[in-house]
Structure formats: C-alpha cells, structure tokens
Image 1: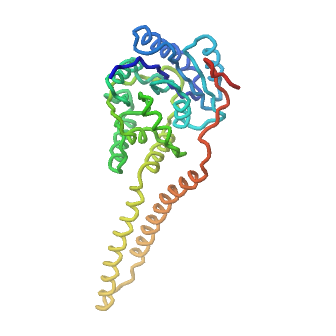
Image 2 (image 1 turned 90 degrees about the vertical axis):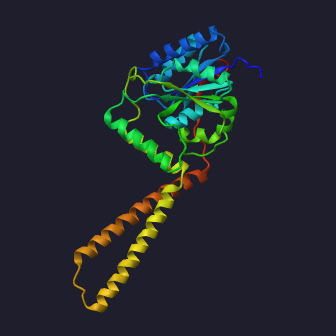
Image 3 (image 1 turned 30 degrees about the vertical axis):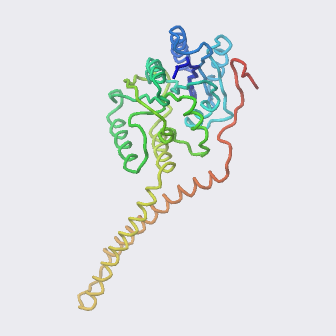
Length: 321
C-alpha cells in the first residue's frame, strides 16, 4: 500500500501555562517546520493549543501566536474541565490524518514526534511515547508510580507502563476513540482498548521548562481513582470476596462460641467484641465508599451531559467567537 504524506495536528492542553507557553510554541513550531521540510508531513499541519479555562493570560498568548503563525490554532473551553477532557476536546476537533498529544511543559521529548511519524509510515496506527527511566522523579514519585502500574495491572486495566499522554493516533484510531461517550475519561486506559496496531518509542523525560506542575499528589491520586473506577469492576468483586471470607470466619467463630457455651467455658470478652465491631464496621464503611463511587459514576453518566463547551476557536479558517 502506498504511504500518503499525512497532515499532523499536535494537540496541547494548557492550564495556566503563561510561563511555559513561549518555550512550547517555539519548540513545537520548529518541529513542524523541520518535518515539513523533510517531506514527512504536509504543510497544512498545525499545533492546536487547548486552553482549559486558564486564569492567567495563556489564552491571550495563544491568540497572539495564531495571528503571527499559520502553524498555530487555538481552542478555548468555557471553563476548566481537567486535563483529560481538555485533551479529548482537542483531539475531537483535530481534522488531520495524524494527531500527537503532548503536555505544554515539554517534559516529553519533542524529538520523538519525528520517530512517531516514522512508525506511522510503517503502518502503526497508535504510537506510545514511553519513558525509558524515571531518574528525573523523586524517590517517592518513582515508587508510587511503579506501585500504581502494578496495581492497575492486577485489577485488569490494560495500560502501557511509564506512558502518560504523549502519543500518536492515526485517523482510524482517533475516529474509534471519539465513539467513547463516557464522562469519566481516562485516556491511558481507553487507548489500548481500541486494539489497533501499536508500538512504542522510548525517551528520557526532562524537567519542566517553566512554571509549576499541574499534577500535585492530590490530582495524581484522583486520576488513579478515575482510572480504576472507570475501567474495571474488580474492586466490587473484591468487596464480594471480603464479604464471603468474613461470613466464613463469622460462621467458624459462631460454631466455636456455641461449643464453648455448651462446655461452660465462656468468660466475659468485652475487648474481643469491640475489636470485632470496629473491624466489621470499618469493612462495611470502606465497602460502601467503593460502591458509592461506582454509583456516583453511574449517576453522572446517566445524565449524558456534554463533556465540554467551546467558547472560542482561533486560527486558520476556524476562527469563531
């Protein structure tokens, strides 16, 4: 099959990235120019910056860049919806043969974009950017990340270890992804479900070029819970197993208590009774919390609300207001 030179959209979610934006703009437009000059992508390729309700002047910088360069387009969401929704907004509005998603902090190696295009030309519909080491992370983050990937694998979530949201999607894969309509989006787990031919490119992650991380511990934990509860029901099955085991232990304990009663060996056991009450109460509250999380997601999904609203588009012929 003859390979057609593809058009490329680089989708970049932005939230309060006023400090990092100039570096990101310069780096990605240089990548586009280089790939176009090499004949690897078409000259109608562009960078699509998605402003996720920033409170600083990120959107003003995007608008200014779009007026100066045909390589730049912008999408402004009506309010902050979170990284995953902002990324979906950008991907669903990219009208190209190939999309590459990358964060504005440029911790991901932009030189890998050319490698991704090369892999696409070899017939791969999905190309994951995967870190070959985590040396730039703190010991705490490195340990918790490894534990997280191990936990997700045990729970049955199929995702690529050490891969975040730096990836290439061909048009076929992107069309399939846009058919997922759920509100609770965890792209790292959804993409492998598409099943198209995929491969990895490896790189070392750098320090953030400017600004502060938008993923503190609280948001990382929230993202992990989103991934678990959106893609697997294993926690519910674990609750059922805990219930079965507890019933078995309780049955054995009840038989033992009856035997002791018949033998007249019973004594007052306030401590053991209180321990049992607290233990079972804790198990019940934890179980209700997990079940409640799933019920909450069902409630939100049943409303079928739009995931985002676009306030403004700029660049090329897409400018609206």
